[in-house]
Image 1 (spheres, one colour):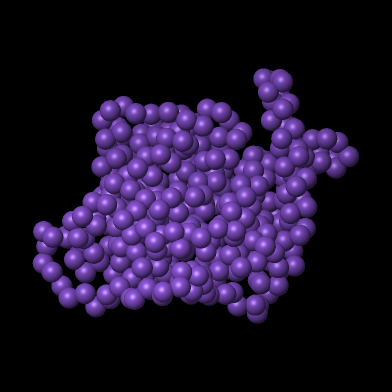
Image 2 (image 1 turned 60 degrees about the horizontal axis):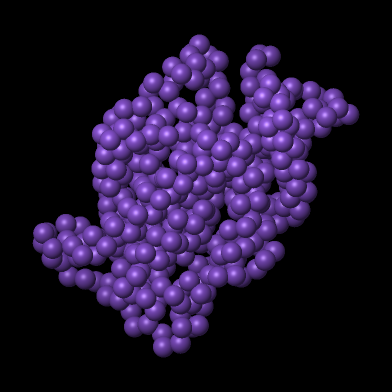
Length: 399
């Protein structure tokens, strides 16, 4: 029981200090950028039909799910092509991107694979998007010009003459949150405390990086005495993770955090941007901590080492499994898969396959608005995921 308790404490502490605090800073930055540029992106993509798959991939490659989610009502209204949707979904890594970037911040060895997987997803997204449009593939004609043709019951709408009206129409279509319920109250009243603890955690996390760089043998011991340095750090990690779990539970979204309503609120209010940045970070924290616990308990109760587990994360099976995990809507399972890579438990080809196959939270609004498109989109993103994963294996590409 003592070992189990220690695993839980270390997982909670490390999830907060090694991941949460850095993810919080990045999520806030990208959420702020989305807040000030949302309408402009809608205008740009409407005015550049020829470049829509490129712009869609740019929206998708932005860490988090906000950019990809904004694209879904645009497709439902007939403003963008199906190839643009595919480009967006292939390029997006959702909230799992923050886990990868956070790993690169704390360990320079991850910089190259982070850049590589984002570059691959971006290029494949653009290429596959143009291929889908070139072959005239649509949800009603999934084989494109090589398949039977069906009547199009969802023709593109006439675009508003005023671009500003177009942007407002898209953003308004995202909706707003229901302000009732204990979850909404808890999130909108407790986010300030969470940010205070996270700010303190970020200071100590940076100090830990400095101390580790100065002393290769530096280790952070568990200490429950709040009047010692190690004790303060331990309690900040425990309190920060506990608050994150509370915020996570209050969202009532178990495998996804971003919804159309939360994105809509963020794009209209700076305060909501801070609130939902805390909420999104809490979501990432919960799933990273879950991944830590799964890996640690697997080794504790099975007697296996990380090297033993890593043997199952290499080869064709790993690529296939990573691609199929990407079929699951939402970011939660994807965060576990990406965390496995940061722990050297799966190969880079498997990481790339999952990054291409997964759709983050963007599949949910597409499922509501266009069920056929959401179903076929999962197929049309998994095919390149398998091709790229197997190709990377064949050429021995790894990091």
